[in-house]
Image (cartoon, rainbow, N blue to C red):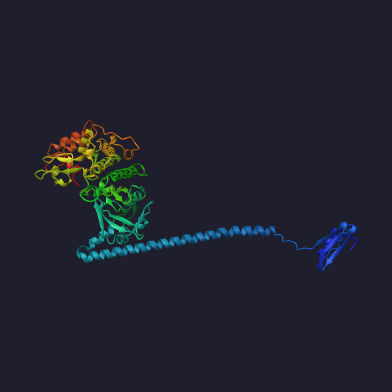
Length: 525
């Protein structure tokens, strides 16, 4: 087709369905349409082929509409949040339903257990069944599960406690807070279950608040609280199990394997670290109030952990079998218990000093040899626990802290070590432990080192302290033993000194007004 330009040639091919392409000769303005079969009209050898160009028809690529793309994005923006919100509503609803169902099941189980207990009491004592029922209803709280306190450890039901202890079959210890039983959790780990007895009028919420504090204390030298039970009037604590028991067993037993000297040093350092953490490492400072060998537990691998910390608040004033008018165990009480002096962390330091001396000597600090069957405070004699280094006459006491003080003043430290370890002790370490112990036994709490300093001195990372000459004055007077009505005057002289103090007085059975006697302060346990 002649007389055509390139544009018209393209239009002709586009409008013809059978056109597969076209050739355009610019020199002659000719257009050639290729139909049914493509071939080349260009002769590369010909001189007139220079102006010839060819084009092939192809399908044009589809173009997306801007309006369509915008509508798709809008649809996604609407659907995606809707789907997410729906999924969240379903998940939250399922969680709420499951929680309510679990609470309902626990309430039903608790009521059924309480009904069984009441029926059993009726069978045992029909006349007092109504009284038991009233007491159970007064002590129980169906709203137990509604008490939410952050930091609580695992809560067990009483049925779970009975299952893990095999109905309290194996009793492994007892103390001022109650009996302790061996148990096993479903995962196979062993635990020690302590029955807290005589918690007084303390409410369930207050008890659980204290448990939350104890449960959040984690230290390698402190026994871990794994759970608790507050079902009805019951108060039980579930601790990790320490398979070697308390320190007093291997330390004071007359026969059996001895605690070697290195292990005693490690025990002293571990116990000091645990107490230092209670005093300075916790969010709330905790005063143990009952530092003694029975509350230092041992396990394989050299584990040393303090126990029963934080429980002093749970005791009632009536619990006075092992405990004095306040808190603590006789034989480890600081002098400030006798006065209106504030009880601080240095009170624990005094008790720890007593434990240090017992670790050095291998026996209890106090033993009595009594003539005519009457000793200080009318306590029974027990000559089997006598200590070397002192003599006794007519009711006078062998009081090892006084023996240690005299040995320190004479530089005779080797004589203070456990004679059963003869040849196996390190003299420098004996001297260090005795000096640290005597620093802990200073009469004035402000002159005693903190437990952090005590731990550093025992480790050798801090300069060793020297006991002050007049600081253990109370220890000197107490160690000589007192008897008779004049004891009050002697105790007053020991406690008042150059300072004005307010002493706590008490009246004896004979009508003599006196201060707390030495036997009441540190009598046999």
